[in-house]
Image (tube, rainbow, N blue to C red; front, side, top):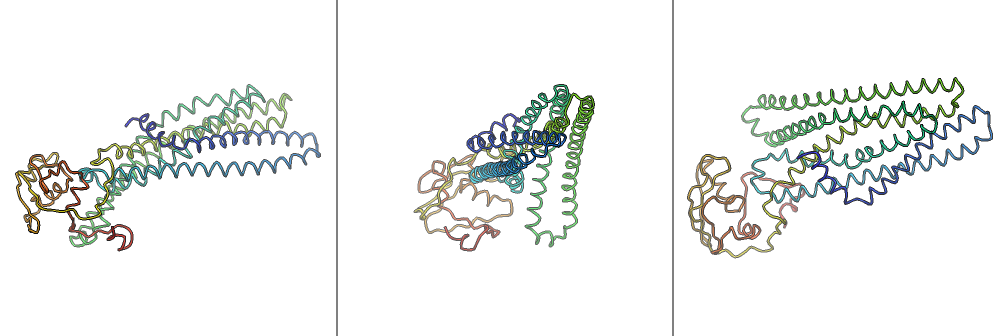
Length: 434
């Protein structure tokens, strides 16, 4: 899925929280005003100190205390709303994924490992949540803070402002250059994490098997290969992030030092007050910091979009039912079942797993299906349950075609006792009660 398509899909979740985002935008804008206020306050305090104006400090101290209180309250609300939005969107994605996963056909689970699906539920979900809260707001806040600081710098000295702002396009270009590489790297890391999660899921649940066959060394070698693949991609990510950070830091520091030298020169000439220079230094942080952080934020967003794409791959997979079936409250009446020349082969298979199978079963009768491993016994039951559609033939229960039944009605005629016992998380009571 293309990046624009992924972001468009993700924005549908974000738009559900328009009110929270509106309040968050207000706290963000108010936070920018508070940032500029501290620069102004530093300028006023410095000028008062240079003028030896002791009386001015009483009012400045009171203003400073009010500023600190207001800033703390705004910061708390801002942080809380970011976390709230992220948590809500994570929850919505988890629920949508679970609802969709429960409706997926058996063929999906046969083709895809449960460990890969688990990774999308956890790692990818966490990454997307971060993007919709902290990263998204910072991508909005940082350019606005830079523009506001630039406007204040223009008021102080237009030449200094232009020198500082010249780095903006270079920083943006840095993000564009390294952003696509970071997203590609992120997808590879997430894919490898899914593979190693699937591998661990298999191994840690089969201790009797690997101990009985003494294949510990073989498994260790395979795990080492998976782990080294992840390490290789993580090192590549480190190189990309290192190059991005170094280049951004170089541009930021160079611009800061250049502007600082020019500001000092103006102060020495007497064309700039010391307080204005202090304010300028503070504003430089608000100008350099957003631009310096921008490439990293773009990289983080690229990673999160890669994770969102993996989630939407699951949500785009065809389901077997549109609404989750309800469990039958009572056992339906059963009279007889007929299979008429049923054939079935798995996608891509060279031969039929079931070939012209016909049988008839009446109420109260018993029938055993026996045969070698791979003979089609499990496949037969999957077809009867409607987990797979037969390629040929029909199945009738009480003279009704199973292909015309709802899946809930069809499966209410059957009970399934698996070879391996499995319990869901919870008590024994939770596992056996309806």
